[in-house]
Length: 528
Image 1 (cartoon, rainbow, N blue to C red):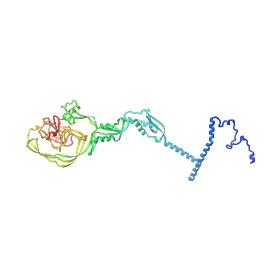
Image 2 (image 1 turned 90 degrees about the vertical axis):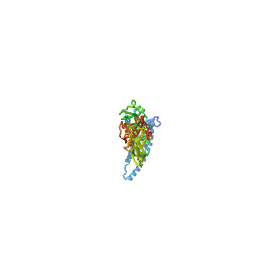
Image 3 (image 1 turned 180 degrees about the vertical axis):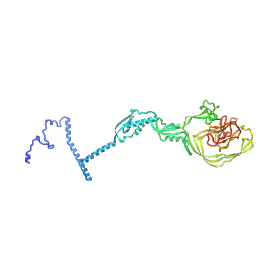
Image 4 (image 1 turned 180 degrees about the horizontal axis):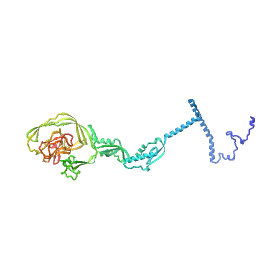
């Protein structure tokens, strides 16, 4: 040991550093210039960093030691569990890879690259790409163009795109962008349009509102006995896209449906027609009819002439089918007994007849307030009719001379009187009286005179007109057959026709009219 110690050289310049094991040298003047007191900022920063390195190295060593201890403990537990201890490096690599995959997965789940669309300074939606945004814009342009019937293009300076990272949850599909863009433009809206007979009436955005409006229009014609209600004109409600200016207030639509529109109603003149009759049949005066048909000579109508009856027609006509329950009169028969003390055509009641009664159920169809069809569904007889016995004159008399008074043209029940008839709040004018009885019942002349018309006439069906040569003319309509001709002289009570339901009729009856100097009168004012 002494020798070994003795052999060492103890020169200061070559002393080994205790920490590095390298020989130390005496600091030179240049070294002394690198002291912290140096005015060089770079040197000061470098020295500061070098001064921090030991502390940093120590901290890292402590962290590594802690991590190694935890990894060692984890490894020991894994070895105890699996008895096949993996290497520490493999474990660290596995953990690092798992962490990287987890971070990447979170990024992929939360974020994506997308395009945000801005219209007129307002952010509309975010879609997957600018190409998808362009496709949505073009789709909206095509849709609007189709509805408007002309080419429509968005102003390019109002639409802008911004592409970048965005939350995946904020990205919507193309249809959502189309919807947002359409709502912002408000050029076209989705709604429900009403068409009557193919003509556009109005539109609303509220589903079911037009159906409810039509129900309100039909409401006055509905009661507890209504079987069905619809409209004569074709009704269609279409769900579609429309220009915003097409949408209207429902009050305006209701007002329009309850009004009339331009549309000609005409009448073709037939044999036997006269101006005053045509006017009265359509609830008009002679002047009203002439105002619609200027230039016509009211005294010279030609068969085939087409007269304008109205230049307005309703937008909607309600057709309703109603069950009606009532007690109906059953007409009585008349039995005649010849009496040679009376003139032919004169009668006298010997035994008065009595109407029978029947509980009746009828299915009646109306168009507006006008009866179109009546079907008797059932009848229950409450009391049978009593036959009337009349004496009938057989003594010869001037056959065609009028007596100046009228008799009943037939027997039966008065089912409709002269004047205005109210149905469901509306009214129509009835120019005579309707006397109902069975098919083929005798129709006789109310007084003597000359037959001036015998044939078919429009709504009258088979009609007989008798001029009584004292300013009076009588009408007998809806006959099944006629027994006289124009020019025949007939006496009071002469059999001239048989009852039927021809022309505009809902059942067997005689439509009887009395006219004085061309004006219609109430027949009941002239009959006994």
